[in-house]
Amino acid sequence: NPSSVSALTHDSSPKDVSSEDTAPRGITFNHDGTKMYVTGTTGNDINEYTLTTAFDVSTASYRDNFAFGGDAMSVKFSNDGKKMFTISTGGVKEFLLNTAFDITTTANGTTPETTYSVSSQDGNPFGLDFNNDGTKMFVAGPQGDDISEYTLSVGFDLSSTVTYVDSLPVINNPTAVKFNLDGTKMYVTGPGTNRLTEYN
Image 1: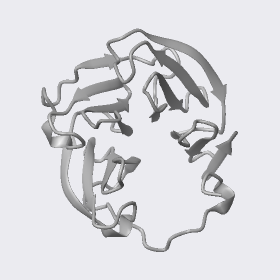
Image 2: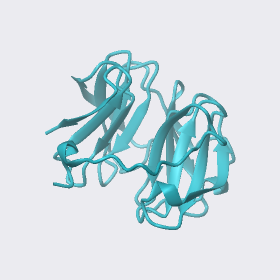
Image 3: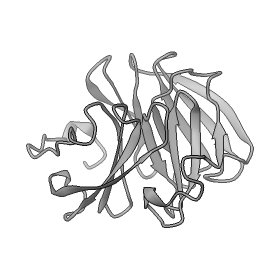
Image 4: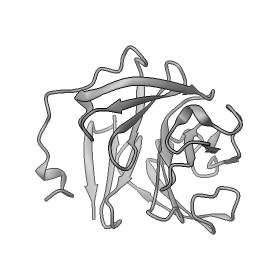
């Protein structure tokens, strides 16, 4: 069962990213798994890697980084890779990319196009994810030990109407949230449990 954490086995070929950041916080990939992005608080940046074998982190090689200031906790991309979203104590920031999935091609350097504050729900957010069309946004935060859900009137556009919907209490100190492709399962991690927890 590719969607169940009970089916997981540990791959003993990790990728050491300590040369780029000794305090990595978040990870994501482009659609075909040939690029990997790791956020970290040592350099408050996003590090981009290329993978010679898709989704095999042992084949990753460092390419470049993007230092945007603030605590770099998580990064996500729009479906077309032309928008990049980061989350930190300042909230969710939206950057335009001139080249899809290339973090070095931000349209306005380190200045985001839009920033959306989630401080009313969590002043120290860590995890970030979107549904498939970008009309829902999810934030994991340790202050409330919950996942907060928001709706966007225009997919992957923080300048549209963003509305807080509700929060779900989860594990202690959640730092990452991710959904499967059809949105029927949610996965949460955090140092409070040192586990990957699956929700239906």
